[in-house]
Length: 218
Length: 252
Image (cartoon, rainbow over the protein chains, first blue to last red):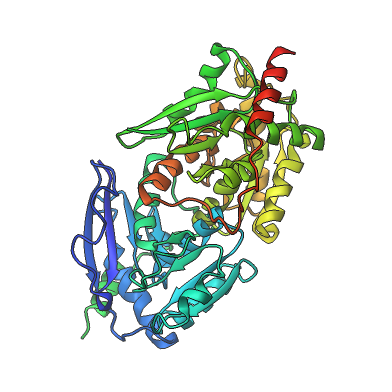
């Protein structure tokens, strides 16, 4: 029975049972924990650094707790690389996974983001070297003219809280990162696959206690 | 019960088809999904030239054309070349999963760079095509082969002692000399070597066929198929013509 730890940012206030019924395999157990970022919303580098720490602290013991995979629901992928360095189990992250998965469905993708994730989305698109495949990052403020602009995308990635943007009428694939990370985590567990230690080497000395202590400040 | 059609890219008898079906044993699948394996009728003898690629595209298109009408919920293509994937996506609304494209993109969720480990160099063009389509040349550490003649019917049977160590050596060169974080098996026909390599290599190694089965399941549950903008529908589907071509090829 795969046990998945789902970490979501508290400011998005996702419901406890945020994964749609019937989406996960019947024997999958999902434990959803909300993670409070010290500086919110995470719109700049200062906030991102603290979000990295918060996510790392929330997930660092996942393996010891008996989880088979960790899913990070925040499109910003905060703490993702750090958690991969600390854990042997798969760490599936909303931003990276959803943009790469979008390229299985079309030649390019657009990201629909709120102001919360807009700058971060630009950063991670570049960091993952997907500039050429990303047709654009659209700022979602209201539905005004959005439908027309979004319709130019081959595939739309719905970052952050844009899942309910009312775009269902568009006849294009829309990747919901949260649902996707759960299915990919199950897939990786089912295939006995996890991240590469070449890309994410373990630290020479773990600092679990320090991480727990400094992240509990406040 | 969800039904997935796995298109096997060569005509073959039941014995050899069972070697392809054995890929199902390499992955834990959720409940409520079943896989039917169907060999094509139109095929080249192997995949080493552009002639072969065209024949493969046509053969796989013909084999999968009716999949949606036949009640399938998704199609997997059992070749890393992704032959026929684009053509089938243009006519089907159900997900069509090609192991080449999907394994490269999944590899980039596990590491920064991947290498593709092939049996022989004559498969190089299969990978360079997909890598170029994805625009991910800078993410591919290398394409390496073990210099072994493949057999797309009997696969690796009886040659394990010679082939497995040779594949391991080539994989280690991908890691140590080329900087690969992740290795992708260059063919679904190499699946019998996966467990041997996975036990010994210091990095993840993707078994592309079983990966497609999980991703088909995910696509069905997520209700997520390809973009019609990327894969526009034809003005006319040449169904009768393709069926006739299949009958002719089967009779040759």
